[in-house]
Length: 329
Ligand code: PBG
Image 1 (tube, protein in one colour):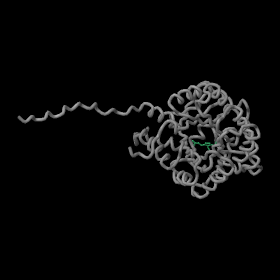
Image 2 (cartoon, protein in one colour):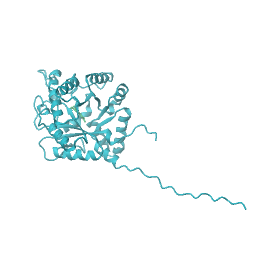
Image 3 (cartoon, helix red, strand yellow):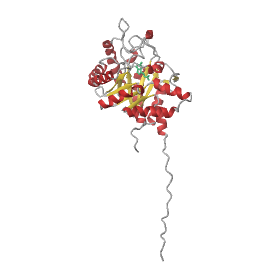
Image 4 (cartoon, helix red, strand yellow):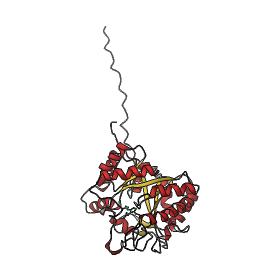
């Protein structure tokens, strides 16, 4: 009766990896229970998620070919565009389709943008690519575009391009406070990304030592036109979620990332924790901190357990015979 926080299937967003050129779903060893989908198996998964009450999916593409600029990201026949079109056709408005917008899955060097001659990401040249991707995703049927590359000015650039291309209603979910985190390790297996020359993303993602800086990132994304903001990862950054909650009323999405999921699964597999209870507690803590929605690889299993939850009924009340008044003679 007095619980302040609750968890339900419609709080959860399921990330889906869709791989070009495979005919069977492929397991990802560092993400037990998660697969790289074929186009077909992704559609079956979405169908089942809808039945479980999940209201949104987030698409990541794993292309067959990569190049310097990551052109598969805006190719109208790129794997994410194909999946968006198919899902829109099959499921109409029963599920919100979110497209991750970045080039790292599509570039041969694994960075989130175009490289300059020194091998660093060129922020402003990269924005031109992001504009093309946004339009390709919008035309393929995305409801929400989620730029994850952390380039300065990416939200403004994408908003302008979408508006000019006749998509003023498309929602932008900005990966606003995204840290350069070691918890993304398994994700890079899932999308077959390794960053060239042992590089990292510290030039464009945030420093885990900084919290005020995250608030600046959030403010600038909102000023540029973000409709929703994201904090990522989730559990090591609950303070950032709370600070964001205190400052803004737009929906806040937290990304419970691959490494957070993998840790739970590994401890569970060793019999060290009760995996399901720890998963529920993790997600509740993220909501308690102030997130409205959580992107999580746990979406399906939690939704299954919530839909199977039948509260125990109280034992039927026994009729109590009223005491027979003693009749005084
Ligand atoms: C970039 C992107 C990453 C994740 C989501 N979008 C990886 C990165 O920034 O290196 C990580 C998600 C996860 O770990 O679950 N396209």
